[in-house]
Figure 1 (tube, rainbow, N blue to C red):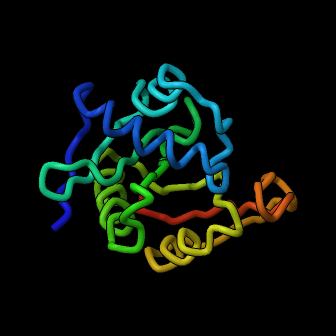
Figure 2 (cartoon, rainbow, N blue to C red):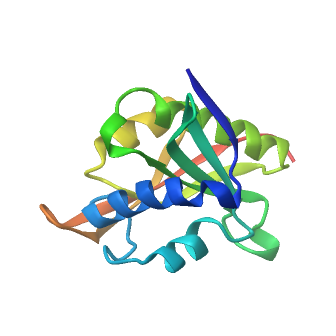
Amino acid sequence: MIRLRRAGEDDFEAIWTIFHRVVRSADTYPYPPDTDRDQARALWMVPPNRTYVALEGRKVVGTYFLRPNQPGQGAHVANAGFMVDPDIQGRGVGRAMGTHALEEARRAGFLSMQFNMVVGTNQRAVALWRDLGFSIIGTVPAAFNHPEHGLVDVHIMYRKLQEP
């Protein structure tokens, strides 16, 4: 069973382990593969991010952040980023985090959620977000340099959460 909770500073070592493996693969996130620990902390843990961890027992198996997509007049639209331990992908951790993030975003008063860059070759993520009610509202051609496939498209995905 997957349990989700807010991350604390004590969780960063486990988050870093996942972050480093996911980013080093260079196939789903635009962060440089050599992003270091301090840069990762700043990208993942620093406000306005609200960071969460997914636990299987006591082990951190995934993490996500939730934040406004834009400041000021765009702050009612949420944005989020998700990472699952590569050793356990396909076991429902991403779905549990996605569902939790939608609930947390509603609770925080966000009206919608937008993902700015879902790599088109990441078919598992695209399928999950569609299944959770997101639509592709735009595609940017050749916007991501994939290590295996070269330049690939990215999708902008959107879902309404609640009425104003």
